[in-house]
Length: 169
Image 1 (cartoon, rainbow, N blue to C red):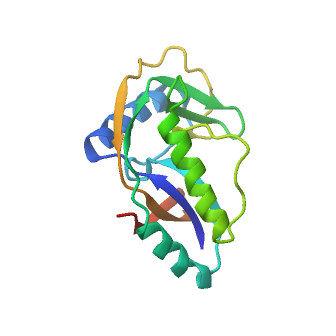
Image 2 (image 1 turned 30 degrees about the horizontal axis):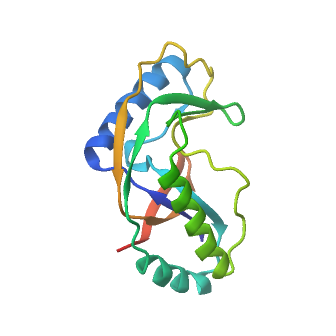
């Protein structure tokens, strides 16, 4: 099973992110991420054997993050594979600490793959034809987060989709 840990935006924020995705799509082309798939990835685990999922779910359900507020105030791109995203212009100590704590717990469970760099972002477009973000509308959103979600990723003909496996308390 292909799994990752994420924060899911509340519905009102998801709608606002969707509107930004529409603006980006009109300007940059590419494949727009559906509103229901918008999220912030904290830890990508990749393929996890089914026999290990139960322990992962139990661990996650015991997690109780303090929560915080993440400011999204800038557009960004990853040249390869043509990603257009929104995120924060300055580091967010609470998100950085959460991501590090999660990886400590995951490594204790035997999961590897901790990234060398964490760039908190919400992907809005994939395979953008143009990475020209200068004329896109300003971003000024607050994301109040509290709960973690373990998501399963699977690929359909029109792109990736996600299914909730478990949530933290």
